[in-house]
Image (cartoon, rainbow, N blue to C red):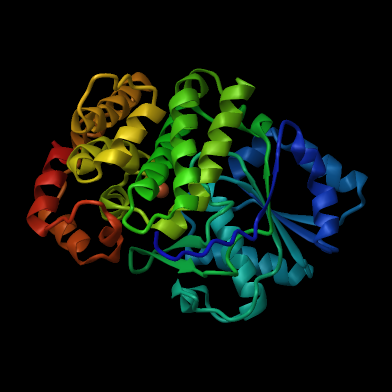
Length: 386
Ligand SMILES: [Fe+2]
């Protein structure tokens, strides 16, 4: 067994109605004035009104920034930071999906490092610890409440960049309350759920995984197999919502350290060049990638098949591993996902040559269990597109 290290600085508070603990957690972190960065749809829905009630009960002064964009731009991060500066806030509470949490992380970096957010694109590019952040995810998928990265869009250059830091970029506290998922639209529940599945499968089969990360990612896969279908049917099903929140969170622990594979590699460039959300990209791509990969990590795909409830009794190891492909395709079909880009939107033309070229040059594909050439990528992307 190879040497590895594991450190997770984020405290997790899990359970129904734990949003009522927000004031308590803010006080523990020593914050005196909190900026609530909240998804505008979540804010308008009133589904998290209990958070504001709790802040008022605890007499914690707060301000609200609710202009978060779906794929946060440099401009929207700057607008939120300007709000933070002018209001003298010393702690951030992020309430929303991955875009909201990423905005909050970027604002926290600017609060202590100043400059322009694009200066911190890359790995470990800032030196000062950001101000404390409490994250309350309102979707189950990105796992951003545990990850060390924030993805920001440079609209002028039409590219996304990632701010990643080994120690400093994770929230201080993640409050996981299944009750806040009640208002998630079905389509979003399904695509973010498949994004979480992609994180877990890619982390588990990554060449960089470790026994610790395997434990989180394999259990995450099991939870998604058990709960995604019910969660898609009814977001107020607390057991299903709890399972999906935990699954997303655990995958969010594993994939930033283990790395992801071809699904996220292709997804990054497909989503960067076409109007397809990250969750939808992963939903369409994952079944194709597991079919491409399964024979190159047979024992792990066999365990994935079993975690998803497949009966592998009497099968050879390779046949059992293939049941992971079958189970993932069946789950996608059951929750109503398209199996190709054409099925999603027949008007999109995918330039497989360009995306394959970008993928084969990217560090993203270094952790995939099967070595992938540019020609492999071209064939894979053509299948995904067709
Ligand atoms: Fe993802």
